[in-house]
Length: 237
Length: 237
DNA sequence: CTAGCTCAGTTGGTTAGAGCAGCTGACTCT
DNA sequence: AGAGTCAGCTGCTCTAACCAACTGAGCTAG
Image 1 (spheres, rainbow over the protein chains, first blue to last red):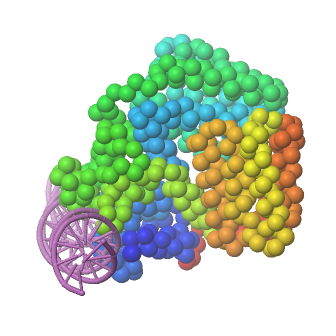
Image 2: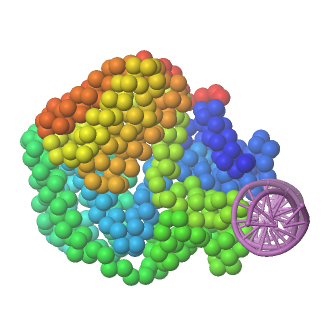
Image 3: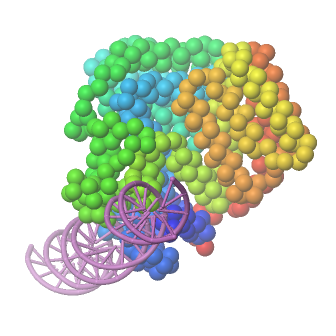
C-alpha cells in the first residue's frame, strides 16, 4: 500500500522542486516526517529508486538526485542476458543482433554527414587500436570509444547513451561468460573500414562494413556458445 | 558494505539454481539464514532487485523470479525525460529522435523481407485505426500494436521489446505532460504509407515514410514545447 | 601562525523484535 | 457435499537501538 506510493511521492518531490542531478535530497529523518512513514519504509523506497538510478545514496554524507544514467538498464540487460544464456537460450546472440540492427541503420544514416572533428578523433582511435594490437594489449576500451565517438555525430545524447549501454551490457556479459577474444588485427582492419566507409559518404558501404564487423563477433560467439559452467566467484552479474 | 553484496548474492543464487522467470525464491526468513543478514537488509536488497525487474514480490504469497522485462527501463527513461522536461530541456524531443533514428534504420532494413502474415495483420491494424479515427476514439493502443507488429519480422525478441519500451516511455511521458493529440486522419494515412512502402520493398521509400510519420509527431510536439527558460543556477522551488 | 590531528555531530547502514495484512488450504458446520 | 471459517504461511510496516562513514570545528604541535 504505502511502499509503491512512497517511491512515487519521492519522485514527485524531485519533480516539484525541479531538482537537478546532484542536488541534495532531504535526509532520512526529514523524509520520514514529510512522508509520514517509518525509516524502514523510506529506506526501502530509496533503495528502489537507487536501483533505478533516480537517486544516489552516499554513506555518511547524504542522499542526492542521481545522474539519471542508463546504468540500471545495463545492469538489467546484462543480468537478463546472462540468466537466459545459463538456461540455454541464445540471449547473447540476440543482444549482439540488437546492436547490429541498430548500428547498421545509424551508420548508413551517418555516412557523409559526420563532422570533420569526429573523423580526426576516430582516426586517432584506430591508430591507437593498432598500436595496442601490436603490443598485445586489450583494446576493449578503445573499441568502446570508437563506437561512442562514431555516433556522437548524430547529436543526440540520449541515443549515444543507449548505444553505449548496449555496448557495455554486451561487453560485460561476454567477458563474464569467458568469451573467446577476437583477433585484434582483424578488429582493427574492420574498424578502419567502417571509418573509411563513413567518411566516403557511401551509405551502403558503411552499412556493409558494420555488418561485417558484427559478423566477425558473431562468428566468435558461436564457437563459445552454450557450454555452461557454474558461476565463477568474482563474477559480476 | 553488505547491501550491494546481498543483491549480487541473490542474483547469483538465481543463476546457480537456474531459476526461470516465475520460479519461487526462498522466503525472507530462509534468505536471512542463507545470506546471514537481517530481515531488513534482505528486504532492501529484494526491493532493489524488484525495481530492476529481476524479482517479483507478491504480498502474502511469496517472492518469485521476475519476468525480466524492460519495464524498469521504461520507468527510468520516462522519469528521466519528465525530469529533463520540467527543467527546460528538450528531453522529450530527444526521446522521439531516438525512436526515429532507430526505426528509420530498421524499416529500410525490413522493406521487402517482411513476412506475408505480418503484412495481413498490419493491414487489419490500419483498418482498425481508420475505424477508430472515424468514431473519434483514441488509437494509441493500435498505434503501439502497429509498430510492434511491424518490427516482429526482424525476428529478435529483445529488439522488439526495446522498441516497445521506447514507444511506451514516449507515450507515457507525452500523456503525462498533457501533449496535444495528433490528427487521427493524418496518422492513419501515414501508417498506411509506411505499410505500403515496406510491402513494396523500397528501402528509401520506407525510410522516408517513417521519417514523415515522426516529423508529424515532432511538429505536434514543438507546439507544446516546454518554453521553460533554462534555470541552471539559483533555481527556486 | 599554520599544519595537522582529534573528536563530536551529522548522515546513512544494520540489527532486533513486535505486530499488521494478504493469501491458501484444511477443517468444520450446515 | 458445499460454504464458511480459521490457522498458518507469506510479505509489510513500525519502533528503537546501535554501527559506520563522513564533515567540520576546535585543539594541539611545530
